[in-house]
Image 1: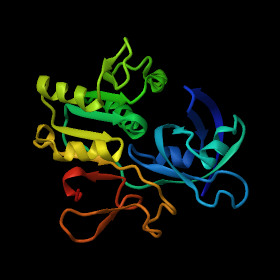
Image 2: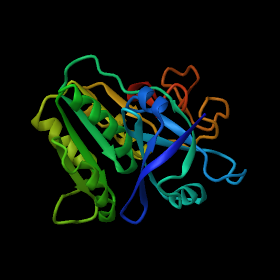
Image 3: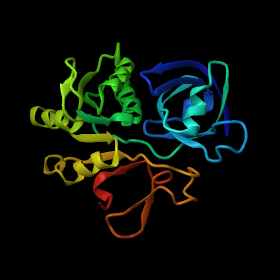
Amino acid sequence: MSEARIVEKRKLGEDYIYFVLREPVIASLASPGQFVMVKAGEGWDPLLRRPLGILWAEDEHFALLFKVVGRGTGILRNLDCGNWLDVIGPLGNSFSWNDNGPFLLIAGGRGLVPIYFLAHALFKRSLPFVFCVGFKVKEELDLLQLLEGKNWNVAVACEEKDEKVFCGTVLDVARMQLRQNSFSKIYVCGPHDLLHSMAVDAEFAGLPIEASFEALMGCGYGLCLSCVLRKKSGEGYFHICKEGPVIALEEVSW
């Protein structure tokens, strides 16, 4: 358990909050795909911590990006620079890469968070990738501020028409990339239905896919069993918090 001090806060769009926190231990240990459990509030209400993915980590700082969806994230939204957060982490496993790419990165909505961290890591190592990011509504396009100034190969989609970006799903632009380029591996994070679509789509079947799964969690340590996924082998379940959140898509039972 650590105390992390908020050193930067930004509001992105109507619903998203971006924090930069100073906590040297978490910042030095964090890898792309990992998350932290954050306590919202001073007392017992709300009781459970919130699992939040790590957006990036460098030197003594790491960043969080979250959507305000309920009481806990509503409390966090009201914090400001100088406030402290009670944080446990980093937790879970991380993405892996065993070759030099190129890689296809796919982020749907809030799935931007771990994929953004992965893009940072690949870029620092000069490994090539294409970053596909998609949103359901154009208000979420405000999150593209995070990509400003990045010398990354980015393809953007929005399901709601906007003249600045491709109109469609993130999988539409990902399929275009697959038809135009060769990739050694795919990394993805997004809603469960997006991951399911990829798991059953023959166009994605020829490449290894590592997926970061989103889930509600009570503990973050594999004790409460609130975030399990059935294994395709039929031998039990993955705990997303403990054996994930990064799991090979082909190993999950759909």
